[in-house]
Amino acid sequence: DNLAILISLMNLQLEKTMDKELHSCLHDLQFRVRTMALVHDQLYRSKNIITLSFKDYLINLSNMVSKAFQKDGIVLHTEIEECYFDIDTALPLGLIVNELLTNAFKYAFNGRSEGNIGVEFRAVLEDETDPELEDIYWILTVRDDGVGLPEGFDLNSASTLGMQVITVLTGQLQARLKIDRKDGVPFIILLPDRKSVV
Image (cartoon, rainbow, N blue to C red; front, side, top):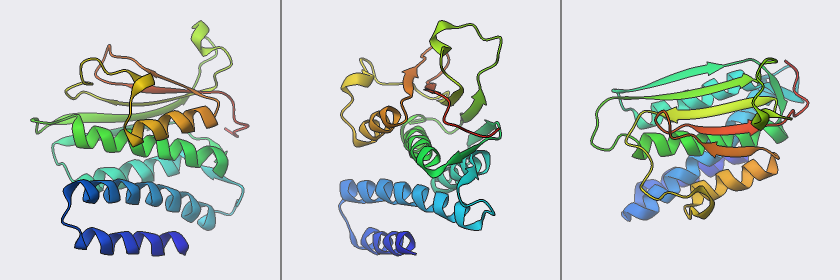
């Protein structure tokens, strides 16, 4: 598998580099490739080669990121409804979750030994009358109860590669991204119907 070879090559480079910034960049890139490989692996193992269980994929992805950081005091919570997406929807959503989870594990708990990270994915309820949810079918939330975003953080002017990836992929999905600062740092993706099968 070409992605597995690429991951192995990055492992070799990670072992050789002494530059901390390069090491961090390669580590983040490796997570992105693993996220892509996970989709292909799940499709390969599935009887249905067109769609995959997004619930299984999201749980596997969340656990993969959590295990990689090995922070015993940080507890991962998942609450994910079952649905099936094709790769064109599942992969960008997976990459978004990977970026948000990676950022949470790396930065949300600086100076803290305990905390919570949550990944939630659910369909919009029929009785939800919020005008913001018009034409929205799914809500994906990645939240933490860590130190919060830096003062003056502006989603529209964020310059990090991770935030740029999130912004581009959200646009690709014709979704909307918002940050609700009321309860920790929830990043919320509002996703229109993508011809999913519940």
